Image (cartoon, rainbow, N blue to C red; front, side, top):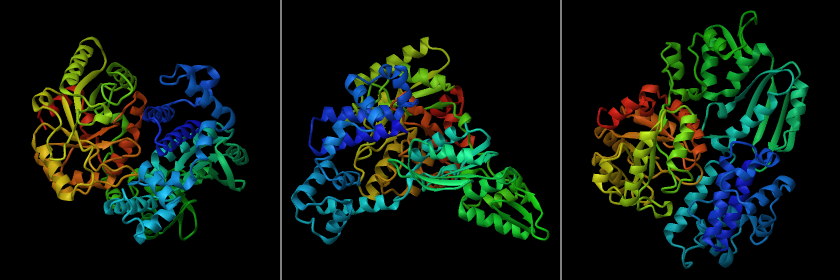
Length: 574
């Protein structure tokens, strides 16, 4: 977790520098450092020990020194000094959607607002009205942003919780006597946000497990510690982790019980009662004589109740039990069904790597193809491609495909859907590409009619193959656009446009509920990572999990096709 801590620290430095209105290049350097830490696959402490950290692209002497300082002391002096310049509450305000550094600084210096609570009170009571630079719309957005933050208070994005849970599982599975270990709870169902981390274990040495758990370096404090169950709060994130050791013949029942959801479990217990059974975390029991019928595996539990095994992702009491009774559950898509990643960025726009570097990493993942989809020209902040640079990229990809073996690179673009629905690139150039993803990157606060109309107009061009991150939401940071989803999905069906499931952990867009709605209208999907760095292609598992929660099968997702069939689909065989 030191990588995550460093990422948080470098972003914190950048935040304060923004408040101070410092050099934007310096700010960008720290944002870049935070991203490098987030993307590292190996623990940075180990990389320092082996000397390999110096070989990581983007880590120069200054950054290396700060990383080393943190590894040795748990602090970075620059950050500690910067934090003294503003109250912590001002920094907290920065993370409220609708509040930027300039607004946070203005409110602090002129109104003394140094906490989210004071901000909410001031905004709600009208005290911000009339302040120069603060418009009525700004106040409305501040209140909306605070409400958004509150909506996930006490919960954590899956992209934060899952790597932590997996790290602890990997530590505990090394303990002598551990024969099985699984994550449970909402994290196992792959909910987009989770409240805590539950871990279930089979072990004939439970006290050794509890000893090792108490020694996990990222624990801030132990809440409880017993012979078979312990709870702790983690540093920085403050996520609660509960570890339980259960009996081998009850592991399946416990895993089902603690995975949930509550509504799903209630239905299971109702079915058990109708069959003359009692179901709890210890197993399935005959009501008449208390004889244990099953409980060692989840499959046994479901089978004893006359049900097809229900994958964890769809245990939400949304019709899955009724279908499981009839053994008619869909064969949910698996990560190994994905043949290629069709949304990613390179150094041509705001990516970190070259076309060939992205392709080589994708090949190492076993992909048959990728699509390079850099931004279009209007997105200046992302160094979007103008026609001349797009021509250059087309030539580079063509050259790569003539010499490289084992993987194909599709020519593509993530083209901006402009405020009036026009596409941000000449149609003749777009027509030469293999794949075009149309995305909204501006005008988020347009009316429902405006933003719906511009999306439909873009699809009607016949040039767009897929709508990128369709709702535009960022979990806990930005609400979805105001869209008429029925109209958008109907247009997508009319013009044969796929919907993206963006795997980036803070996007997970479309959501599971919207996937179901789109799927009911017969739409196709593309699961992509929107990678700006090769290692971000590992995020594909998040997108697949969302697709599974949306009940999708392999046939529903375009990039499960082989290269030949994908190209046929893109050329109009839809």
